[in-house]
Length: 437
Length: 103
Image (cartoon, rainbow over all chains, first blue to last red):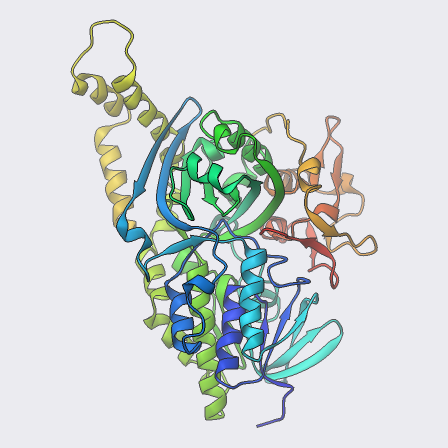
């Protein structure tokens, strides 16, 4: 096999890239990570929360007991799940907490990517991977047959046996160099987020959480003024991440800009008290893939694999959002497949095909497949974002408002509100949603 | 497309909290006409709605403006309009652009 500068070059030091580099370095390969931010995480943004299972397995399998959950710079363990239906005039929130939410292997944590990604990169570096920061990969080097054999960045050409593209959601290399399709406007959302600093005790008292624990919260309805999308909140150690996600197609036709939506959301009477007195510290934006299983591009090329957000590995289920645990798993599997292919002396598409097989056998593809129908179901379920939050407000008003007039039985109060929307239509829609989820 | 409701928030103030190394020399995003009056109104209005940094603006007299300096590098304008009015979308030059301290 031809001499190359490195065994493996990884594009991007996010969750997928850093883990791919860590695993490959642990397996004894020479690894270069090219990260366009001045430091890992400088260009990254998450809602965000990571489900810890896949990261835990990576360190259990590769760190020889050196890295445990306590070492990872998580913000807070999420022990409260809140879902809210928001109408301009009302808000109905479920707050769920359970012993099972925090159990080792089923736990999830809020994270801030600037700190989190730098720590992941350090682990890869300690394992032996080299890093170039502050330079974006411009092109892939390809031979006459189209086989990838390296990268071009900052005018330099660097070669490798396998390139792992973990460039993130705005996947220029995947589209322009590998020929994967550009995501469609209705399969991609824009996320907007602001970080508000608050003392730790204040966060714990506002969210009724024990010390070090925190809450995740998702809103449907008026958060995006009825357009497809929703609001999100994650409590960090000493800050709150608050933001919106809105599907680009729907948003581009709407009557409100995404940043005005966020400002209106922050001023909603049920949201304003959450951030009252907090210091705004950062305003960020990032895309989120919403297409699910049907948006997964080609993952395996001659000499190149695609992992993480660049492969649209994200699930927005309305009541939960997952991406980073998928990115970690795909980074690991890409590295393992690349190492196996290098050892076998065949880094062609066929030689690297085990990445796709490993992915198909993993929770990543299986879960995305399970929810394959959901993105379209959600996209077309306009009443979920408009009339149903209103209906829920009317139902609870009918229960809780006392005005001194003689009252009626609950069924007489509630049924007209539901029937007005069509009981069977509602049941049908809910049944359809449950089936797609 | 629905008519845009009045914008009351000043996003320039919000993004001024961020850390940037602005590349004054190179625009990493370009539209299909340097003279913004020639850029398609409807497509531009889409970008006004979707850009989380409010880089695309239309004032009360209908004049369009675009400034890449506060870009958050999300790529939303690219997905929205690369097939119409977004002619160039590249990553900023080395060490340039936004630098998240929280993310």
